[in-house]
Image (cartoon, rainbow, N blue to C red; front, side, top):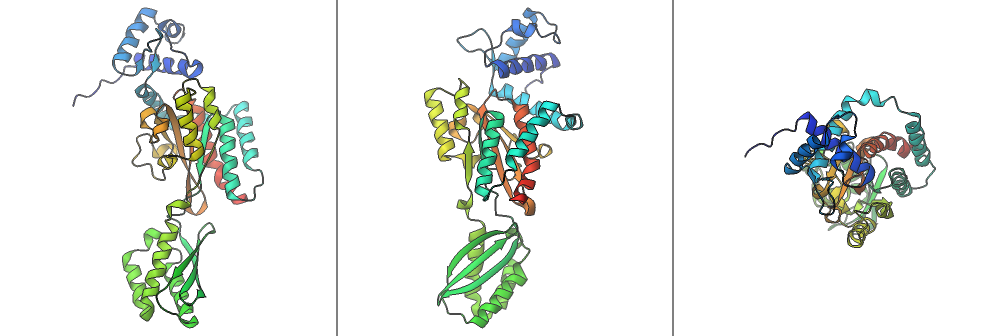
Length: 365
């Protein structure tokens, strides 16, 4: 397979200028517009030749209604990858924020720090703050329970053949499970079973509850090995249950601000996906090792452009997601959905700020 030639510096500068102009205006960009950029100092003829090469290589395209060009998904991808790689290099410089940026972030922190009574309200608040701050649509998931360590298990008798298992995970996440058992158990044996469960499993994550440990525990259960198996199955089922995941969205109507997304068919599909959460679980990533747009150096931030987006109704959009992490290793996903010409730099900076402050906010609730 023949490798595609690397773009030279001049082509990269012209491509970036086209994308930056298109991000600002939403209009196709012509060679005359690019030639007015003083840092390039190139003639319109030279720029036209370079733009023709960029079009042939698939980085820009000429809409049939205009002589100007707009970026393709491939062009956006080069632009975003370059921006993300420079983020880490410029980190120390970015610590010197402008007064306007400080005010913007302080406003975000104040809005998030409002007293809320429930985690669900806090997450909805986060989605609204992000939508107002970016003028795009947003989503956020509840923290994921799987992977957390078991803090405590309490079994109690409900009926002769029914036990209530109260399962407490780190972070004080509590799950209740009614377990139907196939045999009677005395209060004394129930107490012993509670001691066995807690002395063996407390402080372990689901991944650490390996087969050897479970076999040893079952051998210590004696005549009640059947109950131990049923309880262990219930613990595994409870802390891995997929329908615990909830997704909150905000700012769906912001898509009407962008003509390329506000066509009736596209808009209705996109709004339906956001309001009914259709397919949004495809954007939930807790590990970024299989995602083309991900980078460990960029705080788990992933950028999906056009067809890279795993949600069918968002193939005309760009989506930026980030993993947030709370105390005790709980993780969730934040996402921002907008046009391909979104302000990627602002979106990435905003998500990084949100990652930094979410843990503190959750501790206060």
